[in-house]
Length: 488
Image 1 (tube, rainbow, N blue to C red):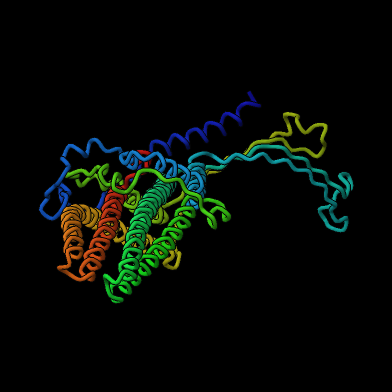
Image 2 (cartoon, rainbow, N blue to C red; image 1 turned 30 degrees about the vertical axis):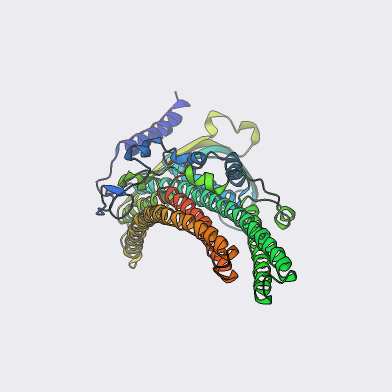
């Protein structure tokens, strides 16, 4: 019984302390409440909510986490998977998540007692010239010790609980930040891929125009040699052929730059960026027909946006920091206990008579800190106000991004329809100009102008289609598509 009493008391004290801490709920901490921001109930396509080629039910058919699959382009799917595997920004975001998780685990350790094993051996020599010297004992003294020590602070005021809440919120914020990197990466890769495919179409269009101009030049050269036309028509044909050749060089240059930019986003090696070899999938005209756009979105879909999630989690963490700072105003109750064996000789170190133990309860109440606690609380409140402003800005930016993306999609559809009508009219104009020139009713300049207008309209149509695809991608990014919003 003599041996077990100290162990029993020490264990009882620590268990009681844990139980008190678990059962205590501090009325001093304030619960977090999300800021009340006036938001619309629905997000409609276009200023009047008009929709062409889409329905409200389309929102349920979209896989927001893999929105790119709607384009049915295996090459695009492979590029996005490659980028997600190689991107260094994602590696950095993952490392920050790991750091935040470690911080959370470190804070959670405060809920448990700290137990240490202490082993010591000491040999001292005392002065023989002092009154306390005993010739029986001699000048040399040995002391050996082995034992356990434990300490625990009862979290009456929620200091550690608030720190744990803050660490958990910051972990979720880092998780959302990784989602932001991921959604941005997916959007950038998709838009870069669409730009490359648009430039492929521009190169093909420019080469076709060059072939047409060169054929016209050969025809004019034969007619000039035969004396049918004058030198003016010949020189105009030469000028147009040279202009078409220059246009081919320009679009080829732009396509080469687009390829290197896409290779960089894919995380490829420097040698592959210098000489990119990139697969091609569906043509841009086909990609435009495969776009899937919801006619109407519930406004709470923006809650899935990673930057909004991150901003709110940072706000939650800042609120928890206030509770943690305020806990410093109140008393701190600490419990410590130790148990072990201590003896002058190693041979009787584990004898019952060599046992020692102690238990201590310590209550500390701050009296004077020269305003340090007030300053810490004031700083925490200021950081929370900053977090509120950042969260508000994130929500405002989210609604603007969705508004602009929906507006651009709607305007792009109108512009595409008008441009298609213009291209059709210009093709008929060119046909008539050729007939009039061959019949001698109009100069060759009229044919050149018709060819130039048609080429510009067809090139503009490709740019509009690329912009339409870019607006669709921007919409998916604006609503937080491309990451698992349920994960945090």
